[in-house]
Length: 156
Image 1 (cartoon, rainbow, N blue to C red):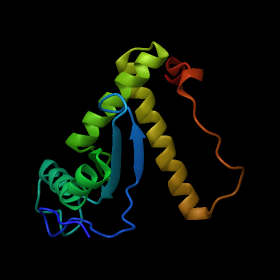
Image 2 (image 1 turned 120 degrees about the vertical axis):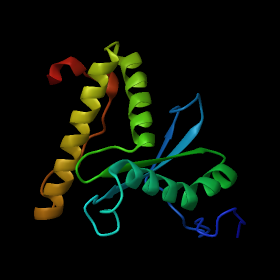
Image 3 (image 1 turned 90 degrees about the vertical axis):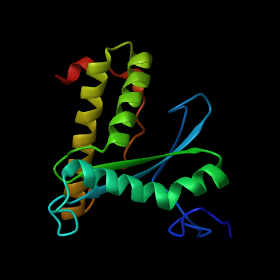
Image 4 (image 1 turned 180 degrees about the vertical axis):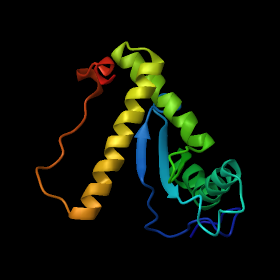
């Protein structure tokens, strides 16, 4: 087992994060993302401002995963935190902005159009997840998404 700065760091052999990607922050750099959606009206969050609750959840994710990702995986870590009302944490906003810059470069669309496309796609993915969790999955398997085959300006 590894030794990390925080006792709350995840030291399990089978520790897993939600998403892994390359070329997010720099070329050939591997980035791990861990996603959390929290209820800002829950008893544990009600006395905090939304901004401080988002920061608190981001910091908790960093305490648990950041050291392991940096030292063991030799990669970067970005916590993606949302409130149930749809507000993004600071790190999530930074990530989505970077994703929009990358997408706009590939599709030759403007950054605001790319941000709009990403937010709409995220909304539909969250809605689909909610529907599947309520009624169960019924249908074909999902096909992979290729960003170079779409015109994001069609989504107005």
